[in-house]
Each structure stands twice: as C-alpha cells, then as structure tokens.
Length: 437
Image (cartoon, rainbow, N blue to C red; front, side):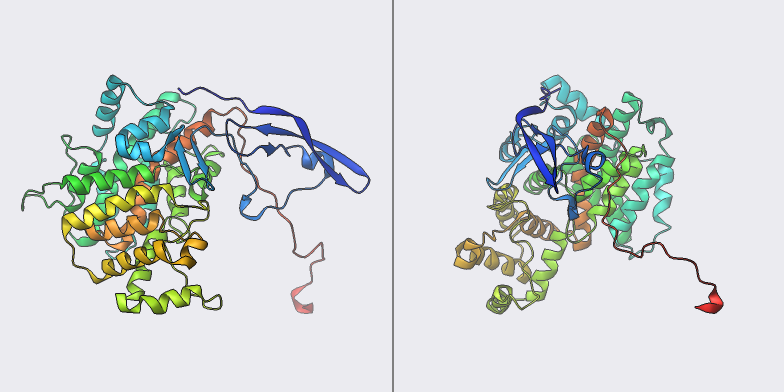
C-alpha cells in the first residue's frame, strides 16, 4: 500500500462571525492541493448549515487515489502523472495501482492479470437477462439492469465487511464489465454473443468479443486499435469525486453491496453532462454536417445569445489543456491513419480541432479539445455506435469506482451520506376537508 498521509492541522483557524458571536473551525491540509475548513460541528455550534449547490466547495471525504489540479492541467493516479501511465503502463497495471496504491512487481502483475483474465466469463444464466430488453434499448439501460443483477448471481462476494469478498467482487466487476459491455453491443446488432479468450489482453479481448463473429471468420485484433482502446481505458479509469464516483460512495455509505453501488454509478454516468459528453460531441458533429458549415456554427458558438454550444471543447475542471486529451490527440491521429476512414463527420472533427488550436477566441477562453472530443473520434472510427460510447466510459471507470468504494468502506470516519437542504416550501398548515377546498 502507498504511504498514508495524515491530514495536517494548521495553526490558524477559520473564524465565522454571526451577529455578536464568533465561532472557530480547524483548518486541515492534505498532501497537496487546497486546504479545507472542517465545518463538521457547524450545525451543532450555530444551528446553521452551509449552502453549496453541487457541493463544488465541499470535500465529502478523504481520499488518496486521484488528484486533479485544473489550473495546471494535471491528473495524478496515486501520484503518477496520467501521461506517464498512458505511455508506459497498461490498463490492468493501472487497475492494480488504483486498487492497491502501488505499482505491482512483476510477480504481482502476473498474478493480478491471471486473476482478472480468469474471471471474464459471466454466469450462463445471466445471458437470459438480455432477452428481456427490446432490441433498440439504450445500452446504458441494459448495463444498469445487468450489473445490478450480478448481486443475484454472486452471493459469495456481497458481504462488505469481509475483505476477501470485497476483493473478489472488485475482481469480478473489473473482469466481467468488458464481457457484459460486448454482450450489450451484440444484442443490439442481433449477433450471437462471443465468449472471452484468455490468450488476449484486456483491450484486445474486449475488441474481439465486440467485433468478432463466432465460426464465421477469424477476427484478428489490430494492435494500433487495441493500444488506443487501452489508452482510453486508462484515461477514463478515475477522475476524483465526480458525479458518478460520488454516487457510488453515497450508495455505498448505506452498506449496499458493491454490484448495486456500481449500477448506481452507471446510472449517474449516463447523463449527457457527465459520461454522455462524447456521445453529445458526435451528435454535434452530425448537426454541423460538413466542413463548409463550420464557420456558421463557430459564429453561433461565439454568439452569447445563441443557445448552440460546441461540445467537446473546454472542461469544467481543467482551465488549460485536458492532460488526457493530449494523449488521445496522438492516438486519434494514429487510428484515423491506420483505418483510412473516409467519413465526412471525421473531416468536420479534424477541421474543428485545427480551428480550436489556432483561433484567438478559443485560445483566449481556453476552449481546447477535451478528452470527450478525441475519444468520440476514435470510437466512431473504430465502428462503435454513439450509444456505446458511455458504456465504454463505464467499463473503464469501474476500476475507479470500486477503488473509491473500497477506500470508503475501510475509512473509520465514513458515515451514511445525508446532505442537508435550504427548505423553501410551505410552513406548517392545517388540513382542509375536500369539500371545503
């Protein structure tokens, strides 16, 4: 395990003055990043709550997993820069890192890879679940249902108080998510399910199960596509306390089993403001249609009175270039060159990228292409329908979710989540009989 940094207590205190009374609250510092004011006694001392819609100024937990510095454009997994991991590591090694806090030794990596690989098969009865969905069901709807149902099949790994069961559940989720995601795609196309192969690595196996067709012809995985897929998985593995991760932690705080918690995370990720951003980006490219239409849409984007927004540019957290986008920028160009795809929509994407990197308006407002822009281009070129984009996000993010969940379970200070509210409804009033209303 990585070194445990205890929060540092500052000699200074925050003072809150209300009327003629003053209240002091301790200030804590972490290993890096902004200090925090501990207001856990605020309600007890002042009979008041804080008001923070979206919790954007509130730390809900202590965590040692992922750190983001949006001003610097920095993303660290357990202290390692995302650029180094994407270049030198692979997804399963990164998964081990997120789960355990340190990079594995050669022997540890070999065992972990073996354990994940030999958990990739799903219970055969789970296949029957798919027949209950319409063929045109959104893949994320299927993922929510099937992942949540895993708790009905794997009873031996739902005791959250048993460290071994937590580990087994974590391995099962990481291992089976690609299989279920591929089955979701196959179900929508009417093709038979393809079982996993133990001789392929994580990304290769997913592509094989997704695009291979049993008995018809051998599917050979393109190494450039597999490498790009692996990078997409690494870059999406975790991203601090975002909406879906917070959902997993909140669900887990009640003692819910890990499969239910991950299903809750998938539901949260489905939103277009979160995991659906790359899907929304592709829909925008379709709306623009051709390169000739780009100037008109650029003008619309610059017009404050026009509701049109360019999706895939800028980021809520990163004030400079998204570090994940830097990695995928090169991968996107390699994939497009390898496949030689002749797609007007991808030509629109290329031209938008060029403009965003050169236009003063974009540069001034730091509206650089983000990870959703490039991942959407790559997945589209590979042949994934846009409805599958968020499924792939969920596949990659599962390891982050389960790592955060495991950290929360072991935290002695964690308690069931219970946000407060600023009530603005009717105050007490008496019931009126229906005939007198």
